[in-house]
Length: 427
Ligand code: GKR
Ligand code: MG
Image (tube, rainbow, N blue to C red; front, top):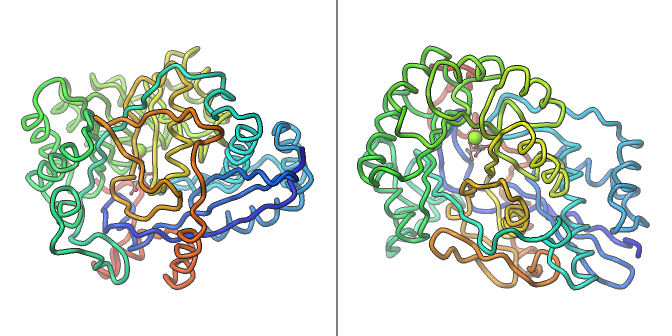
């Protein structure tokens, strides 16, 4: 079987004004939809974060991809690395990953799996070695936020909305706002675990928010706090002491494997990361510093679903737990995340997802449905989704008119707070 066509479509999806250590989400999040088409007209899909560099890299990869056998991803990967090298850009100090090559590999790995799964009539999870669970649990992902639900001028709000749709528009800037957001989100989706995106407020406000969540949801509710590495070691120790016995895990409070390893010795809470151990090259350092207890996988920046299975094996051998990281996304990524999580026996934590914050979709079955905080693993061929071409065209148009070509939360924040600057360590 040969790949005869490759469509690369950048899209913009509505995103609310969520706060994080790097600033503020823009009214639109950017994604790239990749579609590989085989000679017998079967197509495979994937979705990766949108950045003009990734777009250019995918365009450059097209010549290598066309004519390749989608069943031979190893061969394709080899030819891509021969052509583009194995050295990627730096991950960068932002909360999200800014490398290029890993995103290209991820886009191609997932699209090849979707395509070949469809060709042989088996779900992607079977191609990853088979299912160990039928449902994948997700966690409520809370953000401090300004009012609004994103979209044009940031005012895509509906005054007649109720439930989560109304809560999604509301501002949440203090512990009470965070608890109200959590209640609305958990009521709607049935999530049992809760993560708060930290690094946006004074540390004590974030600690108080976690204590308020513990009080509101009761003991035993798995709670996580993620300041995206913006705290000093002393701050992380001081805050961590207040959160011992409260947090399920403490995600990237400080920057770098060494500092994480020191923090780990000073506080009695499992540490998790999607910032200090984010690539196979980082694994020796992870072992040397014992920088974390749990690694958040993310197929977009570990180089695909198959590479994430390799990460799972490392985690098993070196005694790391495995969870899953996310960024603003639509249903193609969500479907891939579900197939991966269903195939990894040691992925025992509820996965992150930004999905409840988004409202746009590019798949014909519409928005995914969470039942008791979980998504059922599809038994349909491939990822089990079909591309809604009219929706894709609309979201591509939105991309062309929104004026964004990469994510820059600092610029968005400066629109609200002139002169605001990202600092890699703030508190
Ligand atoms: O969406 O603002 C955000 C998050 O901060 C995201 O970019 C991070 O990559 O969710 C992520 C994390 O867990 O660090
Ligand atoms: Mg994180």
